[in-house]
Amino acid sequence: MSAYQDTLNSITDLCNAQAGKWDNINPEYVTRMRLQNRFRTGLDIARYTAGIMRRDMAEYDADTSKYTQSLGCWHGFIGQQKMISIKKHHGTTKGRYLYLSGWMIAALRSEFGPLPDQSMHEKTSVPSLIEELYTFLRQADARELNHLYHDLDDARAKGDEVGARAIQERIDNYETHVVPIIADIDAGFGNEEATYLLAKKMIEAGACCIQLENQVSDVKQCGHQDGKVTVPHEDFVAKINAVRHAFLELGVDDGVIVARTDSLGAGLTQKLPVSNEVGDLAYQYNSFLDTVPIENSDDVNEGDMVIKLDGVLRKPLRLANGLYRFRAGTGEDRVVLDCINALQNGADLLWIETEKPHVGQIAKMVNRIREVAPDAKLVYNNSPSFNWTLNFRQQVFDAWEKEGKDVSGYERDKLMSEEYDATELAALADEWTRNFQRDGSREAGIFHHLITLPTYHTAALSTDELAKGYFGEEGMLAYVKGVQRQEIRRGLACVKHQDMAGSSIGDDHKEYFAGEGALKAGGKDNTMNQFG
Image (tube, rainbow, N blue to C red):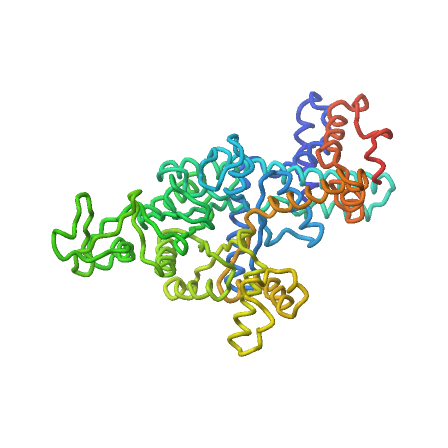
């Protein structure tokens, strides 16, 4: 029996058992409302989406062409429209997630106003946005199912039993817009207890996957800016443990932890861990420090710290702010050590923050990690902080130069110039960009590709275009031609913004509750009818 019919029969029996007191309740209306509200709590969502991620990870392990993708969101409507568009254009949401970016929350959701990505925004805004995103995704389900219910009623009214069965089958096999969200917890917004408390709130809001970075929480920086300070491995592992405890406490046993390392571009540390024996993790962490040998007591100033490395007393070089500096050129080795240690201590996926999108660079690190952890795989930031055009044109230039091809017609440092847009080099660079995700997943172990803040830029770009025309000579035509007409031609559901906001669902509920006396908004005078 179908889920729709089974639910209808169950509710009918329940209503019939009330000795007439529920005669005003229509079991089919209740059935429809129940199916529109498949997920009762955020924990229902977290458990469901964690299962999706685990299955996707297993599929990727078997076939690297099965990588996953997401786009960053800063509002529930943005996330909703992304998933509606994915279903519209690609027929399924499989392999497509949403990303919740701490950068975008700081820049767009803080009560302090726009902030840099330094964990200064309210940490409660993170679970609030997760809850908001899932509220909008569930509303997208309710709206789409509502249209199917009307189609079912129309088929029945026409006596079309075959059509009615086909629509009911679509209802039974309906694919939800609810997908996994990879949620950015920054560096935990405090110590491991603070990390645990915030992780619980995020999971309760629906997060099945939490991304945690190895920077010092109170001096956290954007991964693509300078001044990053990392923590020793035991500090990071304590926070991984905190997140795992939160998942397990709440019964999300398949919860996914993404361990992010910023060590490639981080040259500083605030704390020197205690080493108990040569070769342990603390020893390895300290071995990367920029130090000078101590010959005698005159080499040690008041307040200096001295450590022994390989049997030699050495003084770590300390900056005026009390931070210690790592040796230049050690970033890649520190990344490899970070990743291996994170995977050995409970992390499921890795995130290596890089300064450019280069498959060879990423693969070099991942191959080293896989010598110890063969199943290591990445979440990779396809960041707007990279100048993708310049980076890939320079990569093509370097490859051609290495091959001995004549590159005298190009200036490497000026390849972003528009004069190169129609060249062979630019065309090949665009092709490499188009293939970056496929190549990265095949050669560099990238399971998930995301763009952290795409809609920050698309909102700015589309607003610039509209403002240019609307406040200029085009006037209202700028909106009509550039926005509304495009929505109509491309079949965007939000052109009927009243319906998208829930007006049609509300009308149906009024009829459910008040019958023929319901005052509806969707009558003949509703201008939404102009859109067919």
